[in-house]
Amino acid sequence: MHILIAPDSFKNSLTAKQVAHSIAAGWHKVFPDDPAELCPLADGGEGTVQSLADATGGRLVRVQVQDPLLRPVDSFFGILGDGTTAVIEMAAASGIELLKPEELSPLETSTYGTGQLMLKALEMGCRRMIIGIGGSATNDGGTGMARALGVIFTDKQGKPLAPGGGSLGELAHIRMSNVHPGLSKCEIIIAADVTTPLADAARIYGPQKGASPSQVAILENNLIHFGNILQKTFGKNIADQAGAGAAGGLGAGLIAFAGAQMQPGFEVVRQLVRLDEKIKKADLVITGEGKTDAQTQYGKTPFGVAQVAKKYNKPVISLAGTLGDDYQELYQKGFDAIFSITDRPMPLSEAISDAAILLEDAAERIARMLLLSQKYFGARDESRLTPGE
Image 1 (cartoon, rainbow, N blue to C red):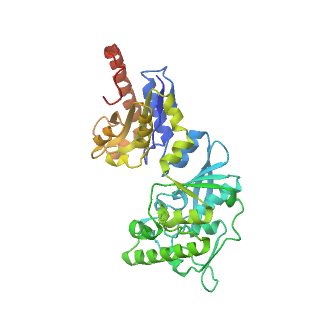
Image 2 (tube, one colour):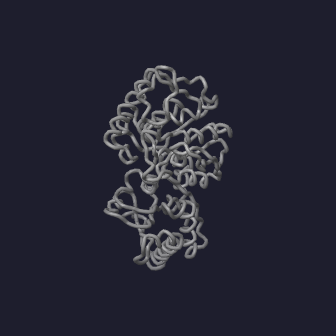
Image 3 (tube, one colour):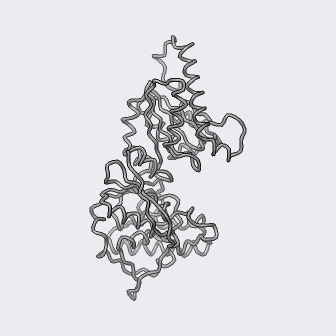
């Protein structure tokens, strides 16, 4: 039996590659001769760089950039196995987790560090970029990112704007003459599932970034003004495009200044790792994530895997660190079996620290159940059955 193991990471515990290795180890205790193809995955959010580097034989590049408050921070991006495609998580440079709760300052935070990652990728010869834009601490419309790449923003007096979304209301002119020449030759894809337009970014996401009601109003007006300046500068309505408001307007900035195209996160990963081809070859697909519940069906990696698997009529088993509310709904959405890896009551800290062992044990138990089925029920006529019946 050919097994495809295609999980997401278990947040704060294991990378997707580590998850896949643990599942394979457990499976091979029972079926040591089964070929198992490991395909670590992500959905465009946290873990995408590591997963895609692992899946394509790529590597990580470590680089120091500026955090959302323009302080030095150690960051990274990935270069895929083709040597010319960079994968960037904006959260690695401009993410909310880089700030303490008392440091959240949505009027001042900047995406400059994300632009520095892009600049380094261009300098290393990358001609394609995949940029995941979840988890931001910013509301600057991507102007910080653009500054790092050479775009100049000035007010009516020709003075440079201060960093952050709080100054966007003063924006009068955008100059593109000093932009890095490699940017126009680089294909840029935004991996995101957010469809929010620019004008709604502050209202929907500002409070979670620390914005008070009065600050939300300022940011909302400033982003509307920014959208008007973009239309005046580029001759098209960027502000109303789906996803322009993602990451505090970084979506709009990437579309305007880098000619980026937006695609659903999982679909980007699906294409890069050639998931359809791998699933076609498999007899069984095993996926997984840290927590599985009804929300899994709204764009998360295991759901994407299950949908592709059902397209080719392949059975799908999913493993989860924990099962949440209404996970049973997923049985009508392409999943054939869903299991929690915990085998006894335990604190969350223990489940996180022991995740690799728990995954291996769970995979072994599932394999033994399949062996039992083959041994005692293998003679049944299963030709008329399809997964889920």
